[in-house]
Length: 207
View (cartoon, rainbow, N blue to C red):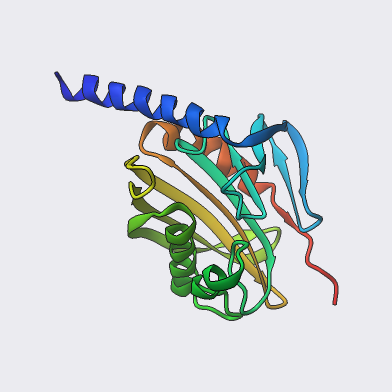
């Protein structure tokens, strides 16, 4: 069996597993067009996404997918206050999650995101490939990219790439993070995600 055929068969297997995982959760179609995230972030979508509305694993403020959560995901955490985790949790689980701290350096922000993914998605083997400054809605932000692996969840293994932006406003964090199986799903969806990131408008809570 050639390497290309083996890769193709793995993609087919992931697609089947993604459909099975999606069947255990509930989604609603959103886009194309404008979408408002709880009055905190507004984005323009140039195509349709599937927004998770219920299920056993919905810890983020928003969780979207195009082909199934095992293949690609876009998550949003909006208005995270100082001392709070990026995802919803309670009890001992909440105590063990990494917390956002106002004024965190860019590298620490990326570590925070990776640690949260490790808890929420059982991800591991993180390797940061880029951290740089960016502009989101006219504000200075952090843009970053990294790779990681999954495999602790039900034995489903995948190598993934991630792209995210984070901005702190008045001591609160706003994060948009996209990750997908490399290289096909990540490369195919990246232009759509880049367009969406350019459209992000932050609506900070008035104090």
